[in-house]
Image (cartoon, rainbow, N blue to C red):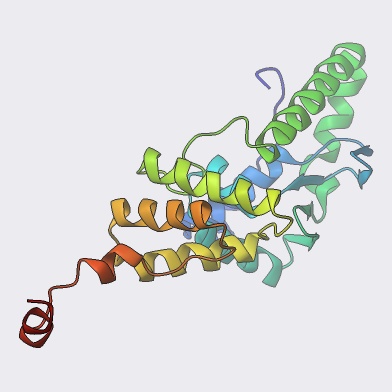
Length: 229
């Protein structure tokens, strides 16, 4: 990675999304991640200017939320900077006009340092997809879903793994909706969120539900106390 670089033209200062911090960040990240040549990984083909990723992965790499990444990608697609297509557990993003951004620079570099660049780029591609594979298998990044709470992040990651084990894996959209439901059930209480997740895993439930203990610990009415006396 240290020996690789991209071309970034000054005309980007006049780009309509330059003042949108999240959109600009995601686009520059796409330029950095895009592959320089065609290939395939795990049977998934990619061309120059493309890379394989997912919304949770992009969120971690850009330090944005999944929703912020989704919005930034929508902006970039609306103005033609990128296209993408999504499958169950991954998406392939294409930087349109890739050769206009990077082609000339790459060609001149190849003329001067062809052999060394070939080695560097191949090493970069291998490392990139090794890291991607590790992320997809849950071996690498901490705080993938909750950057500010390591315990809750681990609990949610355990739930995602649990869903895979019961043959009910969550899609990117499913993860986003599940996080929203968890926030609603817990009222934003992270400790309660963890207990809700643990409850579903222990009980063997597919979804997330209100804590049973919340009902059990509910103060009794005077009538209940009288009836139980």
